[in-house]
Length: 192
Image (cartoon, rainbow, N blue to C red; front, side, top):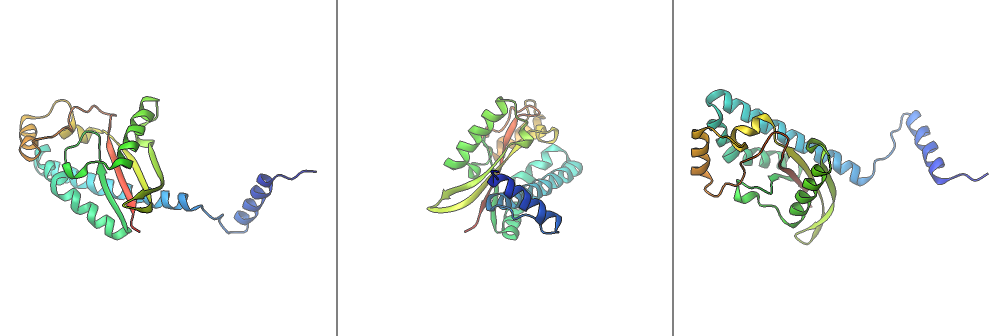
């Protein structure tokens, strides 16, 4: 009788799990889970602040959240989690969010995956890559364009929103999106 390694591995996993010990996760899976949680936490904080700003003063009021508060939220979450957390896109509003080479390649792959039928909310990638001469874990999670986003990123902006965006971002390329479009991505790099 031939016993395959996969069978032995499956039995060992079953025995460990039934004995109360969880099977060990591989390194990439652990890092993916941590990065995914960080992205979700950042997104929830950002959306919460945007919703409060809109309730207090309309869509034009929310522009300040992305202009100023988003960077502070990202910095706070980065320090808490020992990661660098941010946002990037192929169509930028904030020049400081320009994608590096790895991020640019991932954003293009995200667009290909969306074009192939993947739902933007499920598109992510996590892997080890070189950054600044060091091997680090990097993660990106697609940001689908939702109803809230359309206030400042849509195809038809209120005049006061368009004026404020032009004032703050004269080179703005982050408009013209429709619901469900790939708005950009959360990007996370573990600090060495």
